[in-house]
Amino acid sequence: MALSFANDIRPLFRKGDIECMKDYGFDLSKLSDVRMNAANIYRRLSDKSMPEDGPWPDANISKFKQWMDEGMVE
Image (cartoon, rainbow, N blue to C red; front, side, top):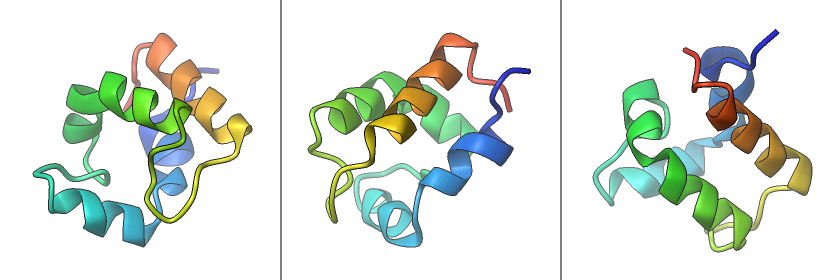
């Protein structure tokens, strides 16, 4: 079964992550914003420059990439 934003990806973004990125003009809690910025989000997760309070575990980064590769299902 494909990963979904609501069940698998949205919970990875912590409240602080969401609040911080609103300052940059997009909302990590909204599917449309994450889809639109997915490549940049993935790049920043991969190079460990995001989130600002510390990098995600590699398993979470892989999950985000898998979600992207599967078509970014709602």
